[in-house]
Length: 450
Image (cartoon, rainbow, N blue to C red; front, side, top):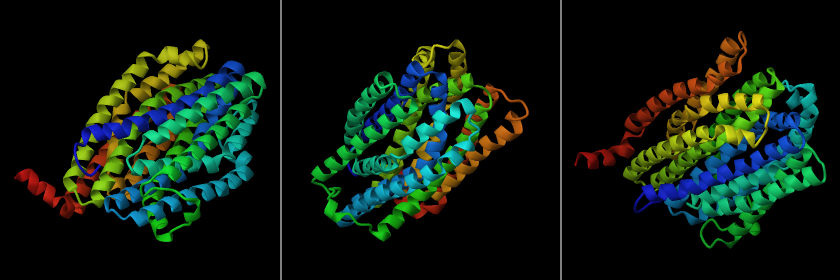
């Protein structure tokens, strides 16, 4: 990351990371598909209605894992090997213990949490059952996220991919066994997901123990370095809060969807599990930008920081737009994998069009946010995304959708909020580069003039 060509290395970093997210979503989609085929669309709606609230709960720790990635990347760039080791062990211990605490809290409040979602009574029982089983696996889910962040900070996105592929195949097999053979319902797919996350976490810890570099893991070294953890939280907490507010706005969207009908709930759930593939591609280049910028910023190389940002943006835009168009072309047969109901498929296609045709705007948001986090400025993009994305969505729901509730009206909130946020982030990035960090970038400007 600190020397040699950048373009090919960003691609080598981002594509396995995107494949990891896509595979993860494929296995999540397998949950929905198995439920839809063997149990019915009410069970399918129950699983789908859980997605926003689960994302809300997990987002806080996912954001802090980004802070761990940035902190460890910067320490690697500065060649502070002892501090890298302390940061790795602090991050993993924090993830596991934090997961236990949050799982206990969420189990106690589970019914109250889901009641806020306006889930129909015919779906609520299964939604609650799925939530309680899934949330019990939070310690291993968060451990996987943080262990993956450790590997990413070192430039390795292949190992998390291999671990996820192994556990994901097991997840699909367990889905079919629990639901088709043992005749379990939503609790079967939730249990399969928890067991798969346990396997992937154990595999990642095993590979970290085999590492010969500064990210080597040892149980005897498990302790929290308060200063390094504080740095991770300082950088990651704004991203985590941003993710939580995103999830909260999605809960408002999902609550609005729940007020329409079961067909809309099922269709939206199926479409989400397809469209998210494009987002994982967008996000993977954003994370690549964060890691490359973080290491080169730590090493004091402004020219490579700027080049990494520019190349990440161009590659992300090309790949994301191409993938989005491909998914749109295959939209109908992909939706058929979840449910054969013509009404469900037609409604699902509406969501795919609104989301995927605007996915290129998301590239601007992810790359600029990732770049600024790499420099350690995490609060500004979090604030802008919170106000731009979440503020616009919430205002749209209450001011436009509620007076005339229709699914296409609701979906318009997505491209609109992305456009507002992308414009604000562009202005913030230019201010950061030209004013706030002008001393850091002065050598790069001088080199460009020469």
